[in-house]
Image (cartoon, rainbow, N blue to C red):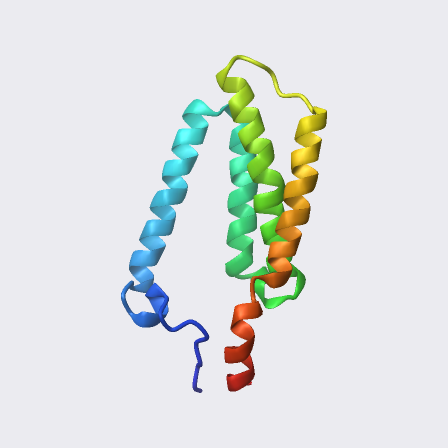
Length: 137
């Protein structure tokens, strides 16, 4: 079976990074993130971190492998960039200055704006791949 790679210059496809090294890096970064969030972020940020880690893993890893489906990349981008990132940053910034989390009009505005922007990104992110996709069928 011949596998055609749409982006052969990326590290794994180009052979510049082994699969084993990639797994080690992913596990190390995930563990370090969990350690930092667990020690400094409290239970709410730790839950957001786990949710983000799950969504990001479900994008590529079996059994979910959301990238196979049309909605998968959109769901992942909207969840990560539009929702989780902004709620987490808002929570962390307020906690850093001693304030509790609360839903405010500015937070709802930025969540709405970011979610719409992330939706637009998710629709257009693969446009640059269309030519290569059509060449290889």
